Length: 197
Image (tube, rainbow, N blue to C red; front, side, top):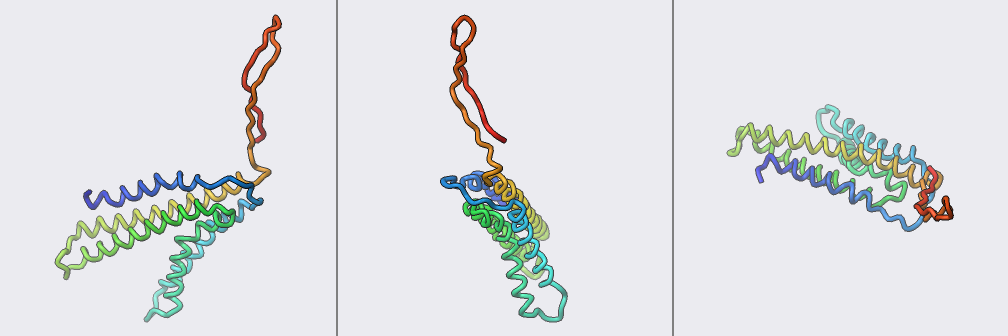
């Protein structure tokens, strides 16, 4: 496979598998009622805190302090794993794992493409290729966009799923055979549908 097709193929694979894995949550027992607003707040707030920590770590300074290294590592961890906070809060561990795995996969690919791009852009290296360096940077940007898309998707998913899982917001549906006496003593049969929403 040509190198410029690797990233789109992997991103499409991750995004194609994600809905099935995220929707495979077990429904064996009724979960306790949870706040959809808190689930959304955790899913959106934790990664935002991570991005703020990353921004604080890259502040210009003469030499890198220990707190900047800790802030960078913690910020990256929150940015990649934080969006799953809402799903963990509601007890949806399988979707949380699936979304986190997708973001970590894209982050690893982005780091690999970044390293390739740096190697191709160094004029002192034997494999200096400005075109390949530009392609690698585009792949890095696409991985970043994929991470952001999965984060937004998970935040919205955790809000909707939490709202749906609460007992007061469930929409039960019942189907039953229906038999009604008709004209001339004939019996009219059908299917009755009842439910609440």
